Length: 295
Image 1: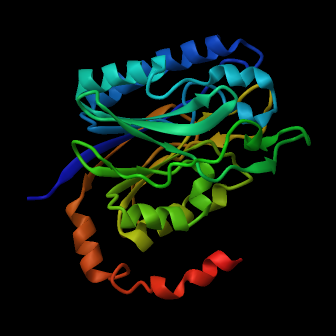
Image 2 (image 1 turned 45 degrees about the horizontal axis):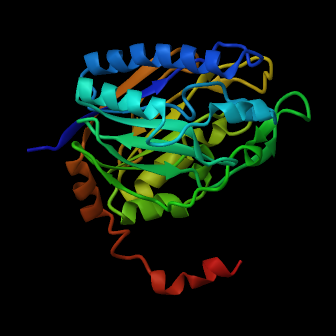
């Protein structure tokens, strides 16, 4: 009997102007997402992943100390507690990307993983932190080193009620080593919550992650927000969230413009089928890969 799991990816537009107080951003986004999570539950989703730092704009377009106010403790902060309630209410696993405060002045780009009974399972901290100029002015870019310390928790895999899941966040997808480690650690579904704009990486969006799915024979869920965000106007967040199977085939995809819940049914037995055909893990030669660390 097939191991089927229904997965939902939520992509959404953030419409509050960046000049507004942080609390207004968080309140508006959380109100919106509670409705979207309910809609995902109505669609019988068992695992739901939200987009990168879901409760606000992509504030890394500027360097402004104001946004440090968006940090929360994980798991002791209010948003984690709220999402634990939602997970328990709907019997679903929720992957919740947030801006985490470790200690005062030390902040991470983090995703909390909450099981279907509301249990907090742990967190992943974004490992690769970009500092890239983008947008219409030199001041606009992906200035993430101003906000985030590089993740220090490795590549954990979480045993949820429905599947073994892993996470890497946005820029992490450009580095093949992490996705391979997640596969070796037993991940069956890997989620990549992102905030990325057209003209910079859209041509890579459907190349890299299907390639990770093929190289590691697992499912991938790629999530991207939609729309433009004032006042930065750094580019168009092009949505196009999708689910990809271990053969690299996209099985469900969202639009470029609209708030959307992308839903797909994943047959986890496909992982064994594909790995029994393509023996990439058997034929690895880690004993000769040391030189990759010499550069």
